[in-house]
Image (cartoon, rainbow, N blue to C red; front, side, top):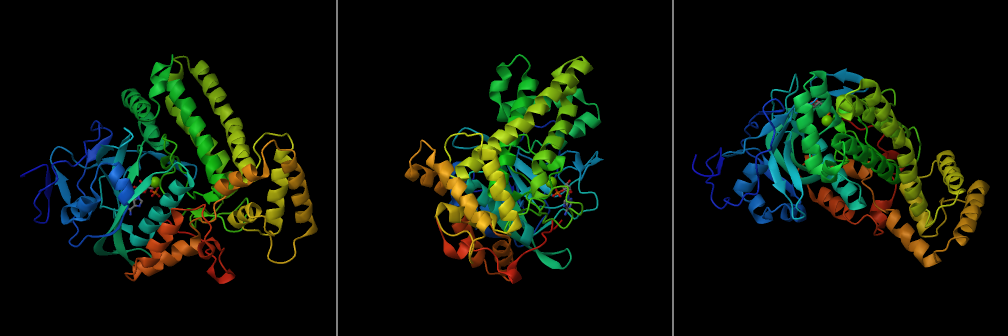
Length: 492
Ligand code: AMP
Ligand code: MG
């Protein structure tokens, strides 16, 4: 080995002395060293240049052969081994004591320009000791879906992991049909999942749990360190962050699709974009994921299921809340009990903003519920309806129903009671109601073109998703009946 980075296929580690990657701080019980698979012809197909710069990477270097070697797992960096993290999880309510990174490699950590430590992880980079029967690979479609949707969420202001890059591996992988293999480079505030804690709780490994709490506090809640009981303080902020996150999802019509405990991060970032989707027509019980047969993770169930997951997290931390089991349980129930009201409060705040309302009134809940009921009854598009309200346009293409007209009159009366001026209300709506979301049919279209080697559709959509509050008629249009995507697939 001749330098800090040694690539596998004859690359020289020139010019990479300043690679900002460091070793992730896990003991061997938490993450096993694992090399990504070798791929003969990796090709960079997407690079998030602004994100790269914030992480201290030169975008130019990432595009070079050495950069692509790093982004495809073909580089070995002395002293910075890639690792696969251990975690467990409740999948659709069933506890699985060992899941882990079966197709992901944590390359290391970097400190961004805000001083925040971030994980850099490859997804689809080959088998690990946690792969079970899987091949460790990812298909191009799901990689581009995660890229588009996570970047869309970031632009909408929703906490999320980010997509740094996508490469194709040059190999064909087998799913329901042969597909191009690909790797996503994901940047996350951490990959500490509820399932990470469950893994060690199931093994009654107190020491590991204490380590994870310390790490979570370091990464996400340094202020908790000052609290009388730092783990209680950590848990409270995790609960508050999830409440805000799910309220964000609901307000932009996002359906995660697989809210298993292994897919919920303590950071409060949206993580593990699988069969996720944005609502077109509003239905509170809407499910897209082909694997969610009972609708467990339907749009309207997301707040309740987030609470359920947080209860599982509390179970792993009970001994830290209080050495006395009963007192620990009572405290946990109390802390968890606040989730519902935190969520309600966050959700109402977002919905008020969507309607241009700047102050609270006790009628608001009824006003919002009435609108949602009408939207559901009349099969109105979630995003377009709020955007039409923002533009003061008719809500339907044909004549509006009497009920909708009545609702609008009530809304106008409520707006008239506001201390904020009409201009202020309009501006609030403008920045609370996106015109452009990652609509399923657009994502599907971008993936289909990319699978034939044409990435221009993906690029055009991505550019548009970066400015969701700017009106763009072509991309804001809901799907025509034949364009509607009814089911999304995990692609695993
Ligand atoms: P996910 O559905 O992506 O949240 O993954 C659930 C679990 O399955 C995790 O432990 C993954 O690492 C594992 N997994 C998913 N796809 C694969 C694959 N193709 N090969 C190996 N493991 C996988
Ligand atoms: Mg997952």
